[in-house]
Length: 364
Image (tube, rainbow, N blue to C red; front, side, top):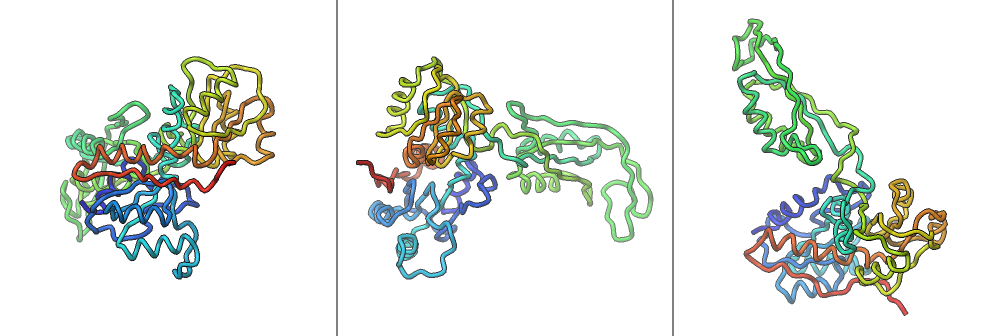
């Protein structure tokens, strides 16, 4: 197996096209054609993690956070970022980061938090905009069934919990090929009328290249008439944060105790109690102050996140319980998620969970 094949598996779980614009995701160091000897999964790529990869004979590190976030102008070992990159290059170790692509995945970081907290009825808290596209094309009537099937097989036509969705209208198409044409229907230079079916399907934006390739391969016309539009419909499966429900409501103190145990954190910073049971819980791994309004609008009783500042706690306004469990603590189970996923996909060598604790924050 080569590095690119591992990347293909990871980008099935979390397509990079859904990463946030500010992020730096994907293969950051290394050769995508290199043969993989082993994979080490970590939350952060530090020098100690590269050393661990060397000792475990892993030449691919799959990291949640990107080691290269801002541009590097020099590689002289002055900063920890430069030293990590230099050591990885020296030992032919590739580094891949998945970060906000996994944040925005329905099976990603926030789903893992929900599972840890035993929340059910999970939904995306802040759906990402412009993630759904619509294809409209025109095909000879007798070929419409085959084209629809091909498009469905390529991933088009899925809407929420429904598959094979399309809209079809029958009509007459006209065209006339010029001297340079080679029509598959009718003759060049003569206006031709063809019984056609107008097919409309939606698809997730990361599949656009695959959908169009399928369209052109399956369609019989020399020139395929089609249009692709980005639509404003909310995507139920792509976006930041999640909201779910506890099976049984908990008092605020019991909820904080539950949170502390399930998320394995020694400290929780929280806002004033709102004097109501906690049942509906919003979560967002990492820095999530921007989602406080969304959590309140969704009717959450509590919002679990990290990196809240002093004034962020005032935003609770006695309507929601804000709980800051720490950045590392909110994302700590992410590497377990990736190991379990890759282990199911790749069986010919071990996927190793890094033993290095990369949390830079210490508590006294």
